[in-house]
Length: 106
Image 1 (cartoon, rainbow, N blue to C red):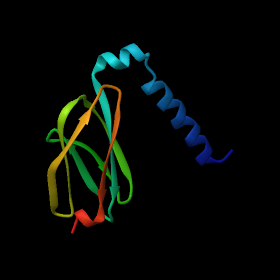
Image 2 (image 1 turned 135 degrees about the vertical axis):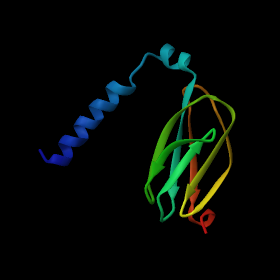
Image 3 (image 1 turned 90 degrees about the vertical axis):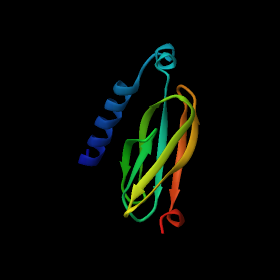
């Protein structure tokens, strides 16, 4: 078994135990996930509700658990630029994807 395969098995087990929760418990928390996709050539910091959410390397992604609600402001900063004008609606237990493309970072 290779090291990569071992790491994959360990991380899968950790993810399963870290995020496994009964459906009722997940619904009661009132949180959802925002998946930020960085389709640019630079590292980007992403924000939700004006607070740092996560960092995605070039052409990578990151995710953050955020309290569910409507009109959640999202934004990014990187390469000496920023834009905090995005808005998403997020239901409890839902995952919303927010992509960022190279043409937005000139």
